[in-house]
Amino acid sequence: MALPKPRWKKEVTAYDTFLTDPKSTDLVIAIMGATGAGKSTFINTLLGKEVAGVGHGLKSYTAHVQAYTYSDPQFPDNRIVMVDTPGFDDTTLSDQEILRRISVWLARSYDSRMKMAGVVYLHDITAKRWQGSMARNFEVFEKLCGQAAARKVVLVTSMWNQLPKSIGEEREQELKKDFWKAMIKNGSAVHRGNLDQMAAQDTVDFLLAKQAIYPLQIQKELGEINKTLQDTDAVRHLAIALQKHLDTREKSAPLLREATADPSLPQQVLENDIQINTVLEDIAARFEIPERMLRIFRR
Image 1: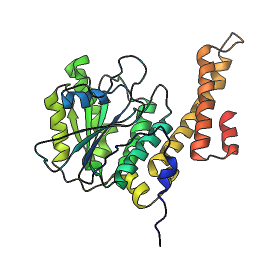
Image 2 (image 1 turned 90 degrees about the vertical axis):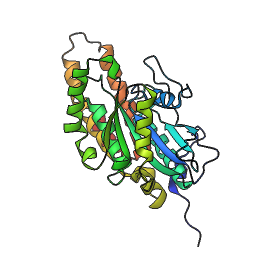
Image 3 (image 1 turned 120 degrees about the vertical axis):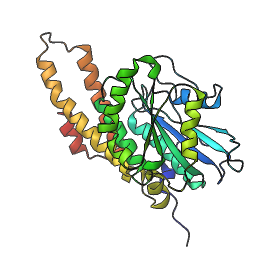
């Protein structure tokens, strides 16, 4: 009896990019994090040359998952695959679309029997506060990795050269104590990214030194259990979080309108309404939310 076709393959589009020559001996390290955290810079610094495009403006640069391979003398029988991913809070793509692109790439690598050596999650230490979208996206990242693979994750703080060390250390302690506490408890490590090749290599070596035996939760769900993308923990969590977020914004929108003396809405409020409706349509298409629920959000 033939095995059923993997459901995740229905999510693949003509715009998705994959390695053309995946190998079962490949060791994969995915670089994830918010837009502007320095993911592409980390890869360029590690490899000692600019292979990944880096954005210098307000717009995000990396739109697709891109893989870069290199050889390491310590692992002569393996090829190291560094995976640059689009950042959450992208300026042009929704978080749902970014999660889809990352998920199908990871599912394809699992299907090709590539080994998941680990994940580097980059966080900009200059961020003054742990904002709502930042917390939401990190929670999705936790679900994507899963508890069993947490020990294959390194949480790296970047941009230390852009603020006083004492302030950075204070924020680092807050991250460890509060927001990253669960992942650290499950085995994740915390490193500082100092924009030098040695620091980047130390982080990669730390992951490569561990046995690549644990696939990420999203890979198990799509590759082993054959779930649909919409049924995975990460996507379900994102859908629920976005519904709560939009509900809050919808409740505050009338108050903003009433507080405006001018009958015409301020541009900021108008753009907020447009964004709410755009995201709602995206959620409806991606997560199959009933129209009656959408009407509640639009009130």
